[in-house]
Length: 316
Ligand SMILES: [Zn+2]
Image (cartoon, rainbow, N blue to C red; front, side, top):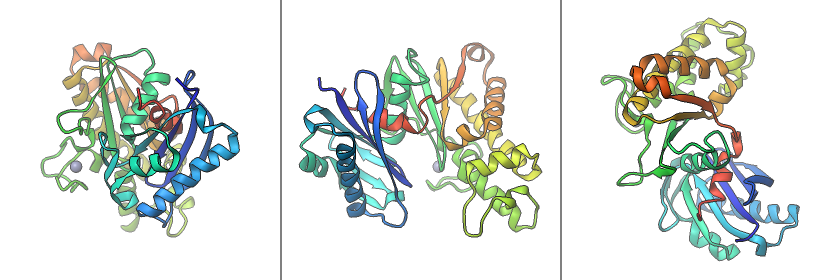
């Protein structure tokens, strides 16, 4: 076994590339590149190759000391063949990441979904260390999750298990990006909260969030936190509403899977402790009394690095 692996987290807005020490799971060095307008397969591949070369240049590690290269991508993937089937946020479709990167670096390349890689990172070195039955839930643009049973990730018949964001919480509810109505992520994601706040502002409701919001820019998790800290009625109401739905979704997960631990992560959870605390308290009240006595909640421990750390171990 060689000393290092490279983990890449290919998100909708950035590429994070890290050299990971395999024995400790520590990130030795990382390169972060933003993805703005320049999307599409060619641009994304070029950025990834540049990031890996930069990483080698900056940390002076010989490629011979690297065991594998793991890529965590937001989108639908074919793990077996290392192909990104569809990543609409990156405008990448049927992209054979493995073939291209193996050709470029002559290292074995592995591909995983971003939520799965982040869960693997948390399971091995983060909030899930030592726990073998858990569910990781990430709240961001959508709501994603990954189920771990007996220390193994449950992928399901088509490799798509864990789609908590598409649990239907209102039969006649809001339209979801997936085409169905009333999915959890149409209510509990950061994007859903943003839409609610923006909709109310357009109708003329006042909020202190306007103090932070520049023309043409979107609402961020930290703007939400600052507004709640200032007692803003509108933002607090929208966050409370999202929390009501998320706690209901989590209660359903607790009742269905009965995990020991639920790890919550993503920008909104990290930035807005009020949202985390309220959701956890309510989920315990909403689930059945017996699983409620055992369930534990934690926030992710590796933050932004959980995906790259997990990706570094995809060869195991
Ligand atoms: Zn949906």
